[in-house]
Length: 174
Image 1 (cartoon, rainbow, N blue to C red):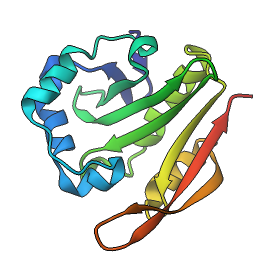
Image 2 (image 1 turned 60 degrees about the vertical axis):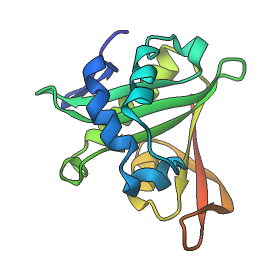
Image 3 (image 1 turned 30 degrees about the vertical axis):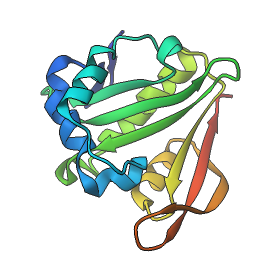
Image 4 (image 1 turned 180 degrees about the vertical axis):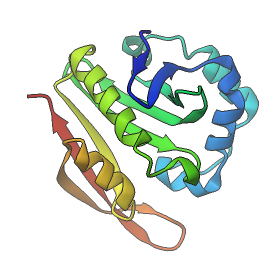
């Protein structure tokens, strides 16, 4: 895969040495509400995932990339999921792992790079994101990148105490 490079970050394919980073992300219970995860992942399962990460997006229907700064520190992950070539659309998800790395523009740059990749390389017509109404930072991020809110899924997720609504945002390639 061609490296997707911006001014402050770049996106790269997953490497075997990403095991510990992905293990930490997938097992951080404070992040589970973002991905509907309810159970921890073993290093063995994540290693199997990494062993198969070479699969083409057209085969796997998903793509996960690492977000790295120019000093090669892994900051987060960005995903293309529900890749639908027939209808030329896919979902996008993003995570910057550490609070100290958030609100520095890394997510905005990573999202812009991935959206451009989706439109210019994968020839998608549209991309979308599902974001909890309480995730104000992500809502702001996606809206700043040209996504518009197209719907609300009422009582969509249960956080262990109460139900939360979820917005669906969409960006169409014009």
